[in-house]
Length: 436
Image (tube, rainbow, N blue to C red):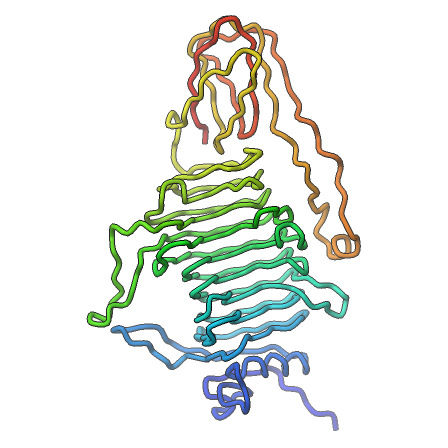
């Protein structure tokens, strides 16, 4: 008679002694039975369920009744049509180096993990496809990764396409609580594969316990060019040097604490949409940094209490503020006759002509077209079976000349990265205003 397969594989808090299939009492386990359960589930083609329970802190004391431990990296292998579900357990990685969890190639999979902690300066979760599956794809696609919270002395979640595509997927965390990076998205400086058409959401980007040199979201690296067309929804709470006071058994913070090199969002990538909010004190200009490679990103900002730094070589990143900026937008001097002026701000600028001067003509030039290849579609076959996608050559900027002067009250709209050039014998005067 053929052996009957189990309908589900269970990981329990005292398994297998409490009736579960695997758990901390699994003989020889270094992962509280998690690795054994996942490997067995893959072997028999079944899903995994992990039992949890109420935990947390109360009166300065931890409640240990929902805790599993990892003494080595938990490796989630390539899978298709697999689900790992569970309650709100705590999974604690105890070594001082390495990553807590490494997620390999996935296709049409769903993972619900609990509160994850990492004592090392590595990643709590590294989402990095590196193994070919049955279809010879090294990729993560059409999959969902759901975390209760991701806590780390180093980086919370790393999304790494250095060896394989990461497309059409969702990463959700109720909270990241980290000392260095909350979320780090990398295409290995442009030499990796595409990270595209993903949705990354973190409700509470908590860095209260950090002191300095930390970043809520690092989107790419110098040279990045394959992180495009993704959507981010995140909040960033700046460091306050929080610590647990042993006497009061409460977390204390210094209210006047302003961390050094604490960045909300550091952007190298292109053509992404981000919905962001920022809380707490950072140094001036550290809520958002647009790095030289960044362009064509759209930021829907709920607030920017500490401002931005714009280093973009092609200044076509856009901020859509949730409040009026209006005449707070700095007005640049009128350029010399025949010279071009670019809107280097991330805001749509309305130019209001106050006095006409003696202008004979003026020219608008749209923003520089990207000299970059983007994925034409996001099917695995198109992106994986071709050694290099091709794209039409970059379009030269298009301009429009108006052979006329100005009139008082005339308005001209200049998008980020667009140019205006005036020909005149007497300069006009103008004022700039940001549009929403």
